[in-house]
Length: 243
Length: 243
Image 1 (cartoon, one colour):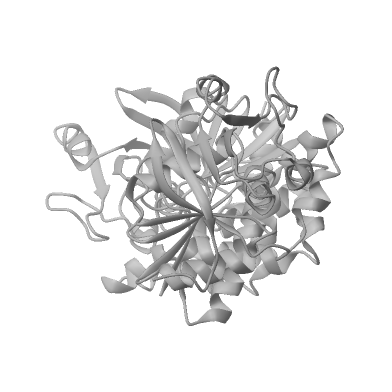
Image 2: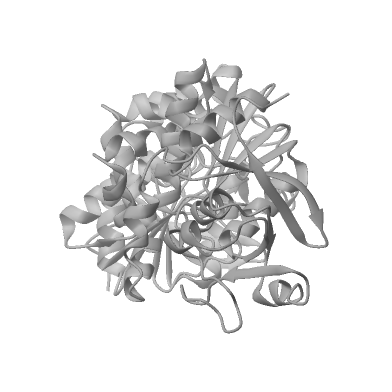
């Protein structure tokens, strides 16, 4: 099994098999928490405007502007809030920037697109392994076109676990991610140093960082199941259900 | 002094100050060696065709196709060969792919663009520090749009040395590069694992890898001094000459 890690989304990337999309602070962590809280589906859209276009439908809107809940939205992008939100049976339209861009790059060519975070790291790695026939790729969202320490560390955790599940052939990006995993004593140290964490601190949301640093708390994996216009539809999946 | 590392070139990257471009296997190492061997100037062009357009001028052509010297060219892209080549006083037109793309991205906005490798790592870091007023950025060329272990390791060596020269504020990419530097016992270990090294091995040029893994053997730094059409002109500079 080939194991690839791409540190940033790019138009030219081609994925023949399974992709784990990582935006650990915060959109892929929040996505896991919304499905944990009972949401029926997540629609990932690339802008606030695209989210507002769904406003008349029976949906909840989630998103952020500068880290905070946008006017007229039901939810922000905090995974702590998402886990407690009254989203049972609902569709949640999530406006994300870096995460959605990465997911769209993956969705263009991949057979399976999964959302991964530390929170669901082991489940996401297991499901990826079950679905893959030749390659598991991990695509880090980064932050406005620049590599994120938080995402690459998370990719390292996923890569390490994928290596425990069976033999892998790591390429350059996977070796870099594995080195990042080993370079830090614990996930919170790595995440706290990232630009994404610093940006949350600046708006008083630093409590989301230790939340995002929790490893393997959820067995839920958001799996791409289709599209509505420019929205990517993710629904709940678990390892052990594949095939 | 801010210290940034970009793991891949991208159109949206903006550089306010100094950029060290790294394509350690092999184009930035070869560039240093050609100037060490006495070349007057290097013209970096993005294709073999662009190089051949200079054929009637009094220049030498250097480049590669699949690692090997292209038909009609005077030199390949081997730094071992470059160091011994009869290039004294000559202009050498170098056709590179990943290295040139990265250098062009840097040149669009940066005040100063330098070519860095392990071979000239300390000189390049010193000159960057001398030229910079607010930021040193290290831009890794990667390999066909994918991050290179060899380049990121080299960025870590440069970043560590920049940190010894004075206080730096590392962002996410710089922290990742520094972790890579510390993850490997020696440069040859890191470089040998890279896809770039594997590609050289496949064409029998693996002896270039230990050559590229030599640290601080040269005090020559190729510095961008101008353009001719789409060619970037690099000439020899040394630390201690700045200002």
